[in-house]
Image (cartoon, rainbow, N blue to C red; front, side, top):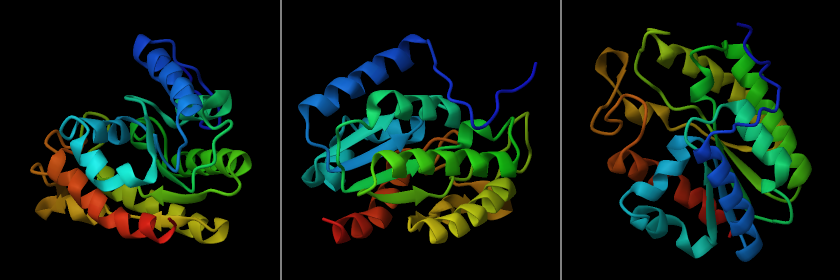
Amino acid sequence: MTKPDINDSIQRFDEHHIERHEYFLNFKQQNKIGLLFIGDSITRRWLEQPQNLLWDSYFSKYNPANFGVGMDMIQNLKWRLLNGELEDIQPKIVVLLIGTNNLPNYNIDEVYQGVEGLVDVIQQKLPHSKIILMGLLPRDPDDACNDYISIVTEINAELFKMAKTRNLIFLDIGKEYIIENNRVDRSLMDDGLHLIEPGYKIWGDRISPIIKEYF
């Protein structure tokens, strides 16, 4: 089976994706958004650490919105951004973290191109928003790959170059989660992929001074 092109815009039809997309469309109509996080489950799970309290402690003063959807690939996020989620909002900052779900089936160049395509969409639709582009986070091996950390390092090096040319803020916190033997710290990412509360505190501590600078 041929894999979808990294630059495609792909709608998902599962209940979770449909429900979250509809929720986001309603949320932005009823709330003024100053700070927008967009991404996959790593972004979404901010709201579970615990019961929203950690998210609120870092970001509530900025009128935040969390548009993360579990299992989204780059192409699924692109569909969401092209289908209403960025319309009629003017956040001061957009935080973008996406790409880990593409790693098993796409190469370094493709993931980079996909993220750059999302930056194109965001800058077109939100020309006055400052983008904080997060480097992909490390993850432990699985059946598809034994060394995601090296792949992520190469992707992030390319994203760093792109960020400089596109006037983005690039924030790579991945080294914070890696321990000896080139594995992730399971006290921060208990399944080797998703952050848990101490891992989110690292992210919050690192990104908060940057956000504060723009508010």
